[in-house]
Amino acid sequence: MELALMIIGVALLFVALAGVVGLFIRGGWRAVLQPERLNVLLAACAVVGVVLGLYAPIADLVRDRTSKTENAAVTPSVAPTSTSIPVSSPTPSPTPNPTPSVMIVEPRDGDSVPVGATVEGKSSAIAAGQFPDSPPPWIFVLVLPKPGDPNQSWWVQLSPLVRGDGGWDAHIFVGQTIDPPGTRFEICAIVSRERLEAGRYGGDLPPAITRDCVSVTR
Image: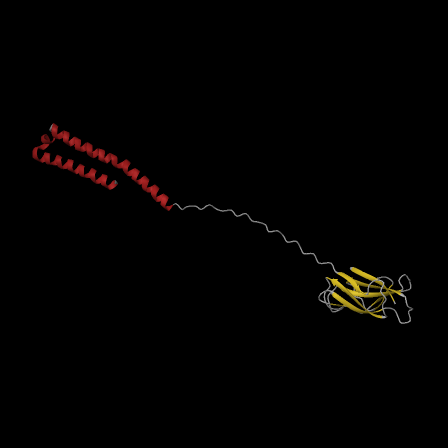
């Protein structure tokens, strides 16, 4: 558009100048300055002025639109920034350690037993095996002759063998053959972290996590 207006303006200017030169050659200034020819020349100059006068605003308009188009083409689009909100995961509660337990199943409270007897029981949270090879805590079986007699002591028996299902059994000695029939004994199974060796312990039971006791007679 800009180039076309410029070409038109220059062409009209050259046409006007060519007419003036032609008139001047044929008749001098008198021919040029004749009223009718002078009016034509002035009209041509006015047209050239109008064309050239329109050139500047039209050129500015074209440049402005071109600039906007180029800016729109090169302006990068900005994607919205997503803000992620951190979600805190719940802290798992620690799993409490199960509490060991022990129970005598055989003999039962009030049963009559021989000198050499077998004690059977069940337990939970006790490692399978036998003291001292298995990890603590352990099950121990103790026998007290004539409960209530201050001169008697608890006797630690041979260590029980604990099975994988928690069941256990131990061989024990309940008094001596010379004890009269009907002699009372107390049998206790305890769970303890104290290392107890078979033999006499003392007048009180060892410290225990838990225990279960039965009274029997010979």
